[in-house]
Length: 324
Image 1 (cartoon, rainbow, N blue to C red):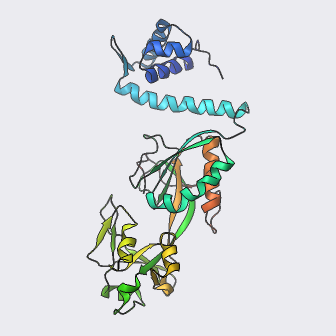
Image 2 (image 1 turned 180 degrees about the horizontal axis):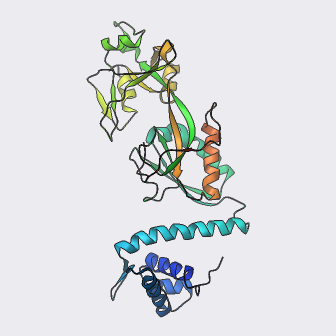
Image 3 (image 1 turned 180 degrees about the vertical axis):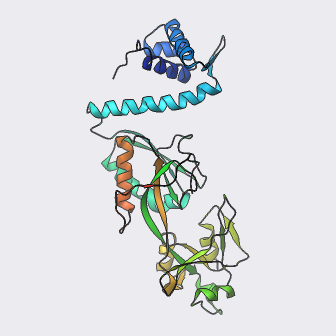
């Protein structure tokens, strides 16, 4: 939808954004169909109204000031929301299209999300996906992500979470490790075994193993081991497959090895504990149709059996700095 660049407020903001993107009054003028002088005057009036310098002008280029950078990030997002709203009201977005940027933990992405995406692309061929697989805690807002999948509850956020699934935990070991050793039958027996440790990269804290007690409550059980791993949750599985000790991990990561006999599941009477994986997105942000259909698709493919599919859980107020 075309814009009225003569509007004294919205038009000036749009021209400021064009100038910031092009780093040039001339480039912004070509995009808007105006003269460079008209663009420069509109931005100068905006700066005067705000009482702050937004652009640093030189003879060769135009750059954002620190204040201009913060203003640009906010108003460009607002303009995008306006464009999305107009497109939906005008019927231009009856078919989902455009780019969705999704951040995924490496292992969960490979084992759970990526295998579902060919079918998603078949259903929604006009949607492009940019996938970021990393265990680094991305900032959805500053880094421009639409969605992120994370395990565990983020400690700080202005995020909303929609539960994908509760991933079951299992304790496993290779048959060669158990050969000649007593098989643990209770969590108390773990003290006699090499338990491969996993440390959370951000805190350095060793993750306690989780079990159901005979009374039905959940136990966080500390274990001991000389092998400690951080960041890559596949590493304890590789060590366990090599006969290095016991590991507690997600069932979906070791299902194939359990079926083949390469690994043996232990402490089954105390099993069944799980940890959640959720889809996160910034609170108070309008979700375009392309983002909503991806979210609904992933929840339908991976979603929990015992959770309301549409339930939204506000995590905490504050600024999101990512979650693992």
